[in-house]
Image 1 (cartoon, rainbow, N blue to C red):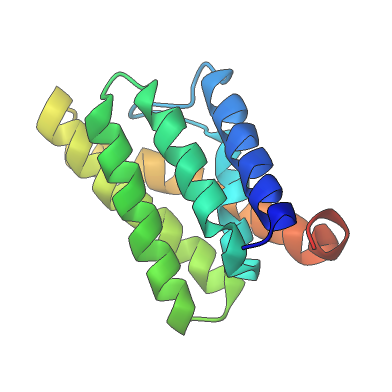
Image 2 (cartoon, one colour):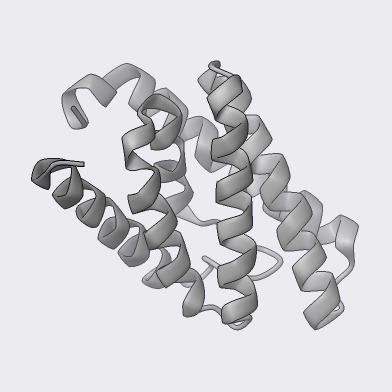
Length: 148
């Protein structure tokens, strides 16, 4: 990784953290995490995986679940980006990322806070799907102008 790629990853991480932390409904069972728009970037270019994972870990450290949310977020990202190595369709990757988010966040919220799993799976999964589909559209249309 050259200096430029390192800097872009740092900016991506900082942007993810800022968009998550300033959002009053960025965590919990009912969430609309605008920063999830950025999570599709590694589906277009794998060199941005470290920046997204770092941003995700830092942002999740601020949630009410703390380290559990950090671990869950990293697990989701690692599994989703590993799957994307084999699945090249960015739309399918947006869906699988959203489904993984719904499942793992739903399990964590159920285990720690007792929130019903199916409710969390639905609310987190659907909100993540909306954001990742928006992100996929944006980066498919304008990604070549935004990120090298």
